[in-house]
Length: 89
Image (cartoon, rainbow, N blue to C red; front, side, top):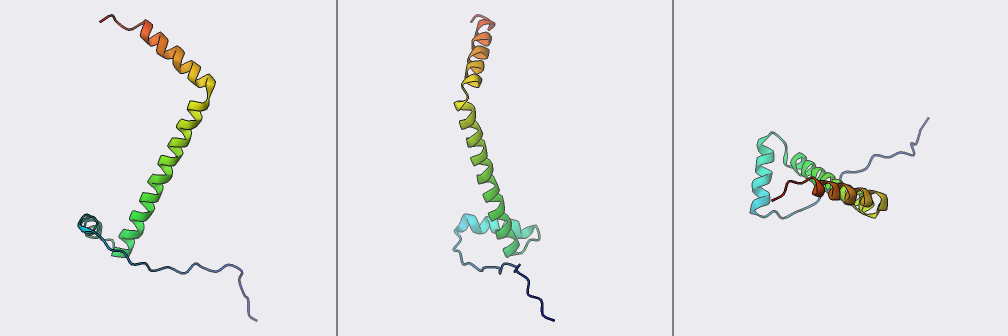
């Protein structure tokens, strides 16, 4: 009996890149930790994408806070209070 799964594993894709001197030095550092070139490059891509997602999430949070009128009013109240209790110069 032959069973055909509807789930197939993705095939790895091979790419070609040209690395400048800085990128080659960085790759050598990663390889020095015991990673293969492929592992080092995959890891670096995942870290870079995660950092980008984190930055985008932070930017979205900042935008949401800036758009929150109640939060902005509270920030202004706190700033005014802090200014009122500040020591004279």
